[in-house]
Length: 326
Image 1: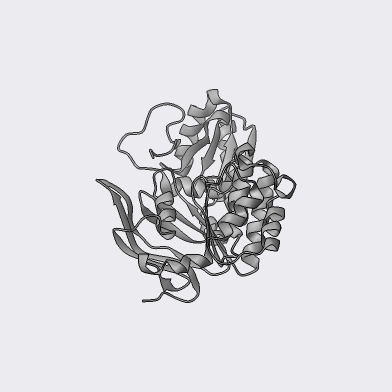
Image 2: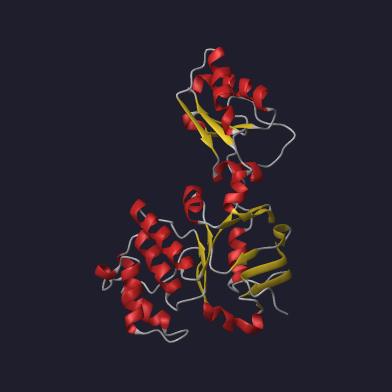
């Protein structure tokens, strides 16, 4: 059985349990060729389980996986020769150098030339430290080396689980540019990340999962167009009153505090209503320290993944989502 040739990766009704715990409950992904796909979800939503299934580390209880249009099962693991992956923490031979790690790892799959090894070291910024033992590498350097391993065989499909983990700001920017360039060259990048602003800058399509199910999937621009917001900053002491006023303006469930430390309130309403938001607060003697209008991935993510409950905690931060359990 095959899937559409225009899809680099897809899943159909993918399910996985760990005992009584449901990790995935009918996941249906569609990842076109030649794009950056942002795979998002709160902790415990099933992202890492999905990554492990896609690379054959575990088997699904039900459903199908398609890689480059071909059904992927335990019997045809050769499909993974065309897939590069960085799942969880990368593992290396600590007593070997970065260069020797790449040579040893490269010998286990398709033939890798010495020039390819040097090219990858240069790409991830480790050329000057290539002779150092990996045991002496920082977390960020290990992560860079893991990305080099994922790219070593020049794969058509790249699966990256939290690739920015441990990277400094310059490294994150470099990673973003590299992944966008890879997609522009025709490769497909599937990236799971908690750094939503970075995903917003690089992803063409996003899929959001919650409780093991896909709750949204589509072109990022189209999804953000449905998420018009106004963000307003007040003092922490004024946040409870501001939340009450803006809830009356926008309706129940349309106001949340997304950054409790700074008392930023997000109002899901048209950007042109920002003046009205400011006026309502000012009439009550609350003067905004900041006001922004537009749309962002964080607000969309919180709207789609925030768990519903019959009772909300009392207090000024009653709408704030602090994340799910693992």
